[in-house]
Image (cartoon, rainbow, N blue to C red):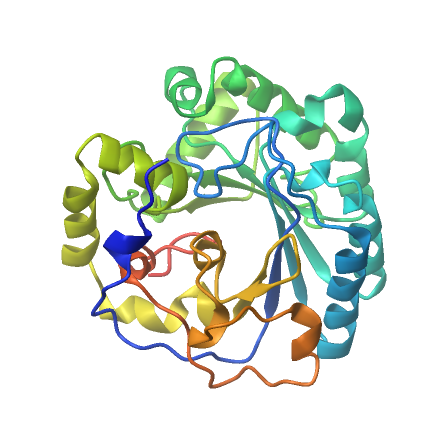
Length: 318
């Protein structure tokens, strides 16, 4: 895999500082039952990195002592971590809102039967990747048969009340194909809702459009196809200063599977330490620290979050 770090390191992106911390985003490991082309984590079935129970315990302690309101769980497929259920249950007991970034197909795997029921029983918000409502586009990006499995999983979630019960939020994620920015979230969401309802009788709450980041697997593909510079030019020429105040790194702290912290999930994948630090910082070492006002580590990929309508794990910013 071609490394994009040297191509991103030199930047003129504006300096950023942290606001009060609201969300802890935790990567539970890179193990996944899928291997998608746009994946910035480079997750897959052969990955061995998995968060341990000791680190899960540190996450829970941080949530409690820092009074964090939202726990955002990512992977890989976060459900494939053997301590996923324990973490979710304990976080919910603390009154923390839990988000599961689910690839949908994992809910149909033999070893994870009943996972959808567990998510519903614990009122876990599901943010599910569905890069298009057309089979050919989804299978091209995520693998043959993924679309049909995703539709089956969405129907399962709907049967449990997701998308209709206000306590069971089901939000879908759109990623563009190729070197383009996402279309307007406000315009694309009605099309998604219409098509999924008419074709499959599926309902959901919100659609999040997210810009593909020029790092890891997607970044490597750009280099291989000779498109990296063109994509970076698109991100830079589409930069909007108005998006700076809403970028997710200002209110979110990212934690990797070993318990080390980063300013965002993308910085984690680049091994770009939090707050411009030269050394890694462990989560439990921040228990007595106030992060507000601290510097945020930036490189050229940050233009991905501020281009066009803006992009975050919660969709567009504008």
